[in-house]
Amino acid sequence: MNHTRKGVPTHTLDNLLDAIPNNEPIAAGLKLWLVDRSGRLISPGTFTAAPDAPLMTANCPHGNTPPSRECPCGIHYLPNVERFFLVADHMAKLNPHLPTAVTIGIGIGRTLTDFLPNEKWAGATTLRSDRFLALRCLYADNVPERLAVLLRARSTVPTTRGATETHARRALDEIRAALSRRGDSGARMDKDTP
Image 1 (cartoon, helix red, strand yellow):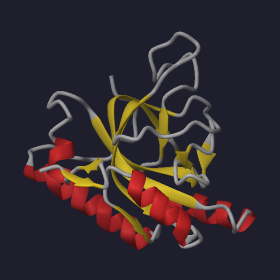
Image 2 (cartoon, helix red, strand yellow; image 1 turned 45 degrees about the horizontal axis):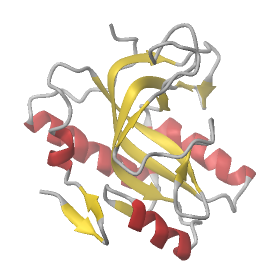
Image 3 (cartoon, rainbow, N blue to C red; image 1 turned 60 degrees about the horizontal axis):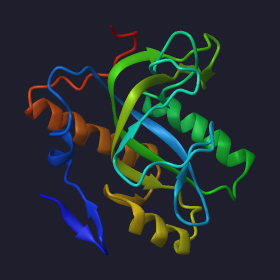
């Protein structure tokens, strides 16, 4: 069932998972974002805004179909919660006033490890897919309430304060359980998929 909050449709977990074709490979993971003054999520790597919808689709200015071995394009995310929060905590120490959020979701379709072999965050190689379906959004405690209100109003997935390892693990467990009920493994993929 879809719900509407101030004109913005929100989706249930099962409703969102229905959008994934059964034959598509998937990889669960976490994606880091900055929160701008309008409450919009901005990628810290490319400074592009997240769409106002749960599904993100990669575009490639190099003419390749993301992800490609020819360029770094694709939607980047980390499959490992512990290592993700090592990176997020490091960023927070560098700039404690930088408002951040994490989307927890599923990379869909072809998934490759990061383009650069040495591109590792806290010892974990990032993954990149052509699509990423956000299923939850958690924002950091340093996000001012005025921005949090804007972020929650824009979001089409459940969005709450508490970007912590515990909350992220809980969300991933819920996602994996929902996938399991549907007959999908929901397993994290560490290797390239065909």
